[in-house]
Image (tube, rainbow, N blue to C red; front, side, top):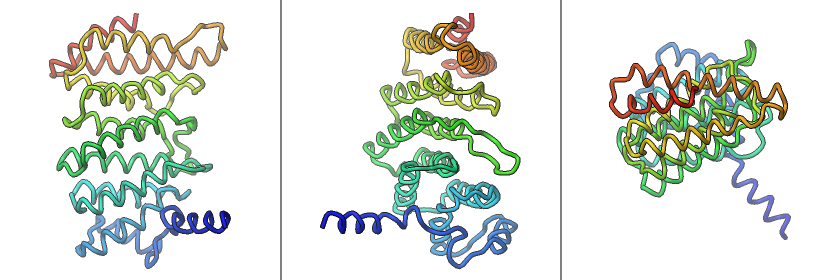
Length: 289
């Protein structure tokens, strides 16, 4: 009986992750034609149906289907405000499901996170999530970034994975939202710290420090954290380096990543016109010493 129940539950949950790509009724040629027309679909119902179908393409190994069509189409429609709250909730929940489970090829999670950054943006532009839903998204995004241990960025054949950068983009869109409170910004900063100086990560070469800096800058812009709060955060960040003798190459990678992250923050705080962001500059300068 228990076995039968497990099978039934698996069958019920399968459609969210097991749909085919290209979606039913479409092939690569028709999707390329749609891309050539700048993803214009005048029929709202058809557009929503295709959007739902394209979610499965976010894990496709073909970079053109995954990135050049599925992501580009979804991002364009989301930025145009083409979906109502019911559609956005449905897409969000399916994208959440894509973050879970085994992702051996490493495409599905990063691109689900990237589309979730666009979903988060829609709530900032025109709020539709409840405070509880928004808080849950902050936790989902922070937990996703912290969980990343696949640091593959770009491959000439396979295209982008870039989980750290995409997770940072998701947190950036949330940090921009004025509905977030201090505790939620602190949760975002805690997640950023994990990947700004990853314990066992490689030396970043795909622009990750710049992307990780963005949620920090937007959190600073809110003005909800004091100078002492920031000093404590940067001190804890530097402490993640550990002792130099604890694996020379790993320590050097951490040092490289920390310096790149702090340098980007310093440049951005130096040239910012925002008073709150500029106030962060001496704290960053102190961390760089």
